[in-house]
Length: 349
Image (tube, rainbow, N blue to C red; front, side, top):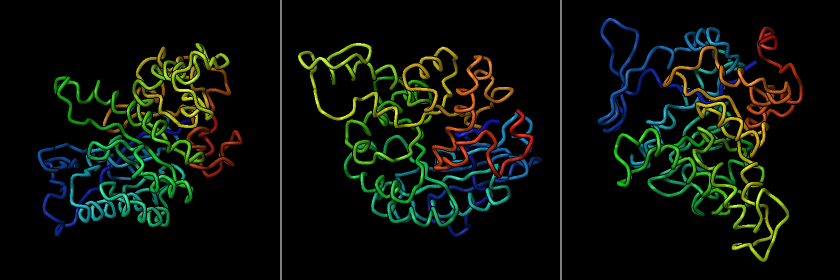
């Protein structure tokens, strides 16, 4: 079976009396699609973004048994006034709860909080949980601030206390060293790296050892940087025993790689060679299936690259669904080969 841990939704509508600058949906003539208009952005959204029946049909068509649904990243608009950000988050969360109630076993919802106001975002987490959502999606930077900065630590501590999960979606940040054409490609990889590294270097990973956090697209280039970080930490190559005479930044805590192995990463890295490196360095128990559907088309069938790798059965089971359940805090389900609450045919895929 397959759980797609990186899939998106969009609300079908927004309040008519919403604050100025709020997103809205416009009808598309002759189609059930709608066009999201949010400032200068215009995005045509197919029914599958907002109709539960279409989601289930799409899952069946591609061989997916469940999706973890997070809001489309353009809704992570931290430049809105904090109050408007809260209004938007609550509207999106209400829609997400309604959509996933159609089939909670196959549609698993993640909400939003207004990270531009860390205190308000922290206080809102209880409402997110009460709505039946399993966690929150945040951007890889908050108005240019790293998520690992100390001012966000109480937020992550409350996430940890409530037993929620976090999905960090890489979001482009203004950058003048690369052309605009790189915003959705190279810059997204850079952003994922910076977000995950900041959680290690800023002390949040140490302060929140039980935090269940996942990074989109395997946190960009993080994995390739970790061996160098480990060398500076421990003075040795290949994770061999520490050589403190060579270490530049020795400390008594876990190594950078050990911290990174506490995180989860979706395996949407577009190449089986990259997936093999991630398995070798971080472990098959850290990777999730991810597709970015329906913003991007899934492979056909879903997880085609992973299926083609002839992974040992235990690794395939971990990556295809068990790790997603662990990330979501459903360890009891992940300890079996037949998770409760999913269609019987799912276990035969």
